[in-house]
Amino acid sequence: MSLQLLRYFTPQPVNLPHEYDGLEFTWRFLTFRPALFKNEVFYLGAVLFYVAVYFLGKRANKNRADKWFDAHRPLYSAQFSKPVESGSLIQDGSSDFFAYSTGRRAVASLHTTLTLRPRHDLFQYLFQVGRGIVELDYRVYDEVELDFTFRDTSGKEGVPECVWAIVAKNEMRGIKAKRWDLTFTKTSDIADLPPTLTVMSEFADVTTSLLKPYGSLSLSTLLSSPALLPYFRSLSITDQPRTRPAVPLKPEERTKHLILSLALPPPSDAAATLPLIAAAFQLADVVAGAGKLPSVRGGLAGSLRPETRTKLRKKREEADREIKEEAAREKREEQAEEKAAAKRKAEEERLSKLSAAEQKKELDRERKRAMRKTQGKVKAR
Image (tube, rainbow, N blue to C red; front, side, top):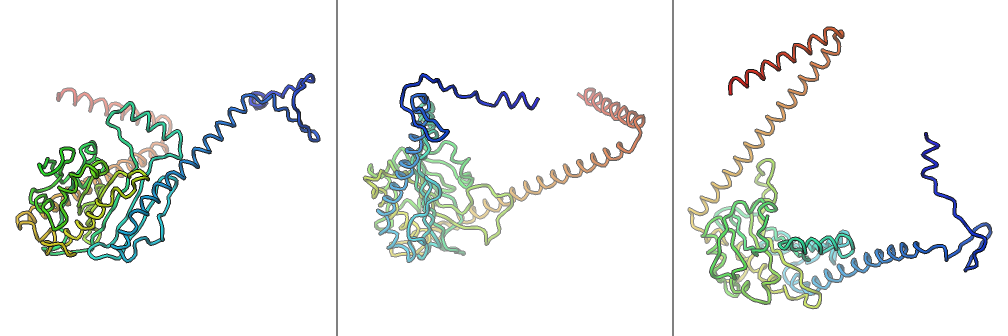
């Protein structure tokens, strides 16, 4: 049998006709006749084309990321004492880039993440293009995300425990499945914002406080700019994790964030998103109650009504209780399954020690017991 398999997989010997009169290279016992390799030229061309696309796509992604970051580096340097910890963007693979910034009032750190299209992977890129043609609501683009982590604050001032966001409507599909924290909110349209944007907020009090002007900062005016609107995807303030935790988080595990998500502009206009990012820094100061903008004393928490803060606290206590109850229920189910598995294993071990006749009697007894249970259920219906 093994010899037959070997014969099946063994390639046929190459037929070298003696009447061959084309180009030929010979070295010792090796002979190379280029005219015999017709299809191999196309195979080699395809491989070389794929390799060329890989390196060109990888270079294009790096060029886009570097140009965007170079255009925003002066702003980072003005805002942070350590604008980029490694001196430049950290590249992870061929389409992901990161930067970590720290050393600023009110903000513990800023994680900048650039997720670019897979230009280095021809097949994945063509799949995205094809899917975009078939699914009209499927959108794929180069994305940059700025995740500000606020310094730990407590009391009635500073960053409150709330979830609030402005989201482009074409990003709304499935956003609550990706962002568990946004399930705390309700969606509403605001007259001061463009019709392509919507607000996700727990209470109207939070929206009123964040959309009012603070000196040179006015979110409604900024987001109404036709030059900036195409790049805006979402802006959110949250005290909850993006994914639902298995157990309630401890106080020291809770962090508060301001997250700005943008579409990456083309390299020729890399500085187009500069006003949005500068506004994000100003908004971080407003929320935390820091900086020189007027009417920011006490931060966002200080501008909320006492009843709003009470409702926000109760909502989180209720969410923690639900998570705790679900975790306890899952634990009971796991314990019940383990107990049932241990019982089955003990029963199997007991049966294995019986003789064949006794095993048959036990199996008949179990079958009759199961039939009686089934009949009882049918009668009950």
